[in-house]
Amino acid sequence: MKNNFTLLKISCLLLLALLGFNTTFAQIGIDNETPNPNSSLDLGATDRGMLPNRLTTDERINILQANLGPDEKGMWVYDTDQNLYYFWDGSQWVAMSSGSLSGSGMEGQVALWGAANAVTGTDDFFWDTEYKRLGIGTKFPAAALDIDNDADIALKITNSGNYAISEYLVGIERTINPISGTDLLQLKVPNGS
Image (cartoon, rainbow, N blue to C red; front, side, top):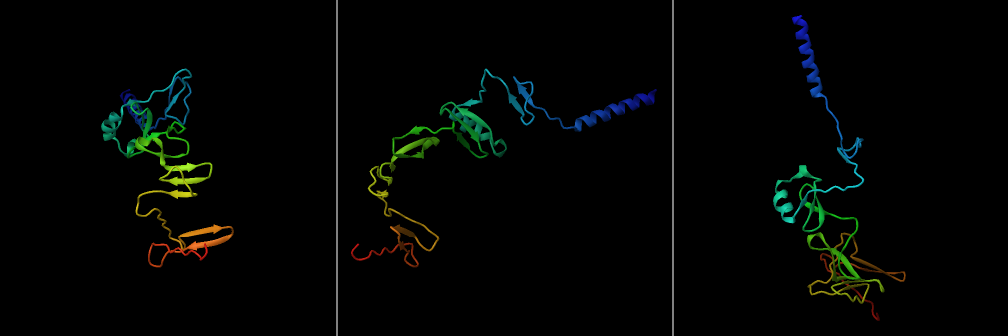
């Protein structure tokens, strides 16, 4: 009898040990009796939404960020100051788009990403839709590309090929080559042009 009881204890311990090493896969369903087997969490409510953690910009950057690293990649929160969702890419917060871009600017201005990852327009970069002209530094471009600035060099083209600029006018090719050993261009204009 004593041997049977010992055998039963050993069998129970062996069974518990085997169950302890067995990996269990489980999905959590909230308002969902049959969660998707590829999901850890499957929400099924049809009359409610989900609220992520809501933090101010200061809380997101100065409190939470100090504890984040590559292991938290994919974490997302809602910034209540900026009214934006942010996700952690493993090294920094990245603003999530709502699927459409919005920001400030006027018709013709080329949109640029400005401060706080917001889309903004500027008269320093302007597209003339009527005449198909791009203005840099002007909102009244007078040529296909009109650059108006105070810099010492208005246009710099860096090219690792043989020619810096090639121009095709009515089937005639004209090429501007760099001066040998420099990054300067030599422009030769034919007489009578």
